[in-house]
Length: 474
Image (cartoon, rainbow, N blue to C red; front, side):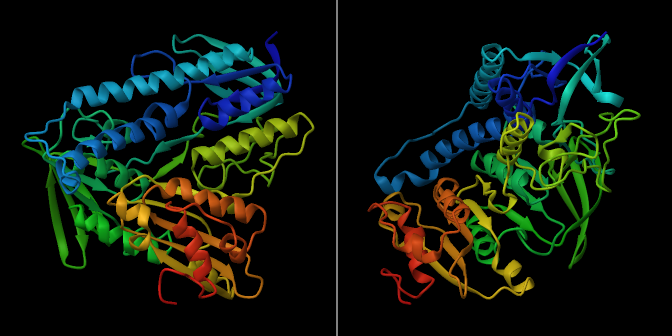
């Protein structure tokens, strides 16, 4: 007979491991099954985010930013350094050390909370039985009163650009280059493409990003996209929009990428090609016969507003369900589901999930864009304020970008907060908190913000909604 648990979590990414910890905190006997293998060839908790996503990319972004500031931005401060160099191997070693620190931390949290970790590929069968194929080929079964599917996602591979992580890279390959490519091509001007493109550009690579859509960062507010695009161009990123990629060839240790745009057929020649065209739910092989769980046309698990699937006591969270593929969204769903299982209230408001792109300047937003308001027929008003008029931003030598507040024309309720500029990954949460409490632009405008601080840009933008900004003409 298979061992039975109160909760079996499949997947140990941010949603899965957080769900497992919260379930265990609530006194539920919990197991967590995950198939991820780390860079050292051993099972590693944390999923894509901790191993080959959020955390290692931020480590490289910070290292490359430090080097770029030393070689390009410090002179204005009176700081000079001749013949500055960077040891790429040391940079990658630092990144790997950070990854190991955090994945090891989850292992310790599992031990502290008496969670049973199981390494292997899981398939959910009928009656909430989970079949697990170990990395050694062994097969075992466990069962749960409740199952939480947190399988995550995998990078989309183009049929004409298969990953080999030698010439054609996925996100993991883009994080592990041991030298700076002279020419880096990137397919996709989304989060991954822009972040990793920025890393290698700062270190000296000639980076060309080809994007199929005619508009840059179409998901973001148009004013924010325009400001970011202008700054990326200044930094030397060559971003080509409306480019439909059709083929790749490897010739003489070079990648030849064929694409077409408004000017006709084109060929981009580069030393490495990063493919970053999005991710898809990792549900292949996850569901066995009789599981009762349904998939939609995109391979995502169908759930209701509380992450419950069509099968009794089977839940699903994170990248493998509807909503944004963001680690923090998955974590919140993990907590909510664990608490619902324990009979507590649990809910995630997808309308207030913040989005962040960790480029320089950073890009962040929460809520509706101006276009979304127009398309929905919502009457609205807007306030904006530039970081160039914020003393702290100018003192930091980071004056680029702006803050934009969108509020309902009648109720003044905040509908969206959109930012491009320094440290906006932190500032966006003013909007998240305000929106969760149904706050108005006037609420933000009447809250005292410290001076000098970057947060004053949010304050001034909120004032500008009613043409009351102090430090700009209204």
